Structures are given as structure tokens and as C-alpha cells.
Image 1 (tube, rainbow, N blue to C red):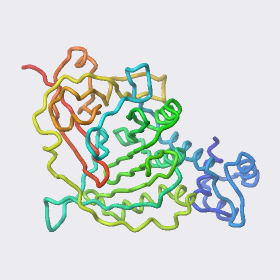
Image 2 (tube, helix red, strand yellow):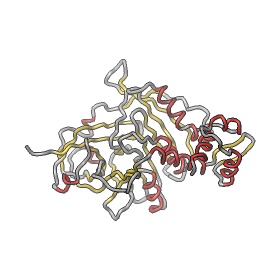
Image 3 (cartoon, rainbow, N blue to C red):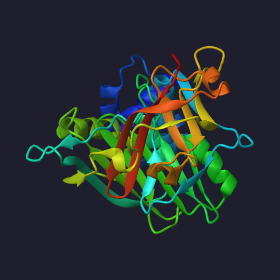
Image 4 (cartoon, one colour):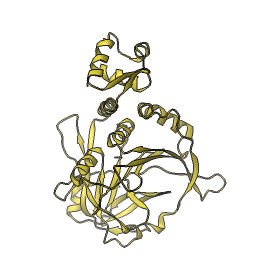
Length: 354
């Protein structure tokens, strides 16, 4: 897609429905607006009705992919060691959905009246017909090149098993492989907000509910809401959302993660997958993993009810440590217990003999 086309799609996505509004918003001179709009309509990226110009779903998706490509100079991939599949087998013996989200830096705020009580602000949207394209749009629009951790982890349920993975491309490949998934949980976590998309009524082809969780530990709620309103504006307009639904503060817990993962914990990770950088600015190459996935079945802690674990390491992992079967210990734990899901982030550190 050409930059001029992207600028026009972005202006339409942000609410410009007439020629005059688009001329005012497009930051490029000498653009043949009539000709480009005609081409965008012919390619079904833009539609025309009594209200003026609007983005089609294809146009919204292509715009989000262009913006993602402009921000992203690298990509990250989850590699499975099981026949190069795009997913890992997932086990969870808790009643509540529990997923690992490495580098989880979202921290609920403490209640001013009770410092032992943690709170978040919850916003619940109406249910929407499941559409993987719209989930990709959310992911693409929120992607920030400067963030140092991967985001977009998911659990896909099938009649026979549950599968765990990372990113939109892997999710698309997995749905193509399993054919008839019955449930989906998709989490996008940043420092001051989490967006959770979850299927309802046990059918991934049915409806999906979107929830947003905010913390005021880093920024006031209103600042984060303003950011999400502006950044996701093309999506809200496409869905017909005029105003973000009013949310509410809710209590979350427990503050102490000991009941999930007590300290100290030492083990030799049995790696079954990894996430590595691939630099798109030069010839693609693989680096040492910055996220590893490993089987937790032999670790004697309550959180072993969930497998695999995904973990990060300060400064990154070294492949030599795994070849030497070096022990690691849990350096940091962040376990967030939301109403209908537990999200776990752990950081490991190698143990070197003195």
C-alpha cells in the first residue's frame, strides 16, 4: 500500500467522510484525492453511502497492517519443537482460565483506604460476532515498536485438546489446522491496560466479548482511556461505538502470589518452544531466545497445574545455558487475578556455581 493511500484510509478511519474533511487532515501535498479515492472504492477498501465515505472491513484491516508495518522493524516468532507446529499443547487444571504472558508489567493500583486491596478499572463491551480480522486490527493498532516485550498470547480450545500460542499469524495457522475450535482467549497486555477478547457460550464461531482493564498505578484512568479512544478510533467507528462504555472499579487479588508460586523454586527447564527476534531491516536472522516455553509438570508448585510456562530472563537467555542443563530460579513473579482469568508473568535467572 502506498503512503498516500494509507493517509487517506487513516483520515476516513478517523471520521473524515467528505472531500473537504480529508483535504484538511491529509499531511501530504499534491495528492490527487479524487483518483485515489476512486481506486480505494474499486478495491473495496472504502465504501460510500448517504453518510459519506467509510472504511470497509478489508480497508480497516489493510490500514492496521500498514500502520503495524511502519512501527515494526522486527518480528517475534514462537517456535515449537513439535513438528514445527504454530502452537503448544496446553494444560490447565484450574477452574479459571490461566495463561502466561511473559514480561507482564501491568500492576494493579492499591486502594487508598486499604493498601492490601488491589483495584483495576473494568470496561465491558457488547458482544460481537467473532471475527479474527477485528482482533488483528486491535493488535496492529496498539503495537508499539519501542515496547520490549511480546504481546498477544492466546489459548484455543478444541473438542480434543487446548492449544497455546503467540501472535496473530500463529493463531490464523492454528485455526486453519484444527478446523473446528470451540473457544478462544486472547490477551494483549501493556503497562497500563489489558485488552481481553474471549469467546462466549462455548463457540468460537459465535460471539466474543471484549473487556478492557486499566490501572492507575502509572497513569490516571482518563489518560489511558483518551489514548485507547484515539488509537482505536478507526475500530470504534467501524463497530458503531460512539462512546466507550462506562466502567467500574473492581477488586482483584490475591496480592501475594505465594499460593501460586512460592519461593524459592529451582529447576532445569525442559524447553518445548521459544520466541526469538527476527530483524526485518536486514537479512532475517535468529538470536538467542528472549522468551522460552517449557514443561512444568515436574516442578512441585501449585502453578504446575498449568503447562507450559513461558518466561523471560533479564538480559535474555543464552542457548549454552540450556545445552549445559543449567538450573534456573524464579527471580520475579507477577500474577494478576482478574474476574475470569489469571495472567501470569515470571522472570528467570540462571544459577551459576561459585
